Length: 168
Image (cartoon, rainbow, N blue to C red; front, side):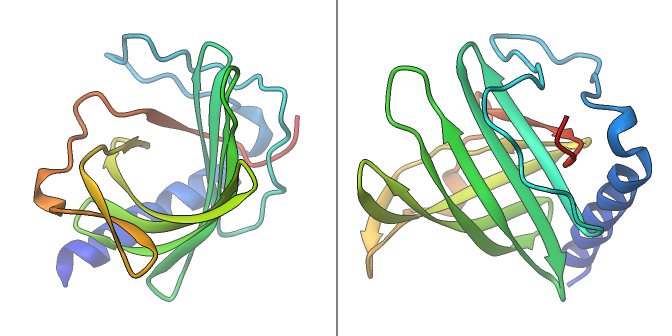
């Protein structure tokens, strides 16, 4: 499918740009990004090490943050996702999935509050950023999946900005 190849090509380009830029650019600024979302790359948690085909993204809002590391291989996406929250328990785990047009669909297999869970997540690509989608989910075979992918709302989603995968 052409849109899948387009997203894969774009993700590969973003990965190559991230590797080229390296640690010289910790936080790109995007014109027109406004709202509650602080996009500082400072965080109390340490990101994973960078590899040649990884892209990393960071969402920060006040004392809450989320870190996403993605690797593209053979058309599939895998990586890690971690939520570090100030007043509630965070979570950390792995993601794996694929793309459909400009949207990344992954299963987030994570630990939170001593429990293992699997939840479908969706990220819409806009510029270099990824916007986390929200929508109704229901459990199906121990995975919480979107009830209707067509109704996923990206309007007020968390905006994950691209960052260096290097530890600073």
